[in-house]
Image (cartoon, one colour):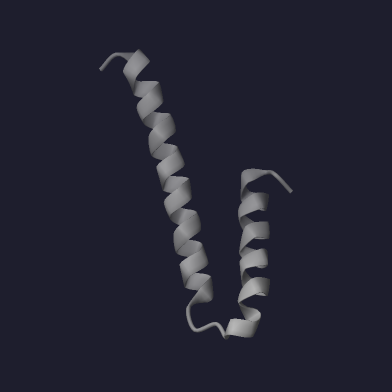
Length: 56
């Protein structure tokens, strides 16, 4: 494969992996969570994902 085609594939693949991981983390965090605690759990998950991405 030519390197011109490899880089877009790598970028798109990494974005898909990060997005899928974020969705799975959110789903696992919300499993068996009471409705009054879901907002706090989602805020904590957003903090974790932001920290991993270097945004916080």
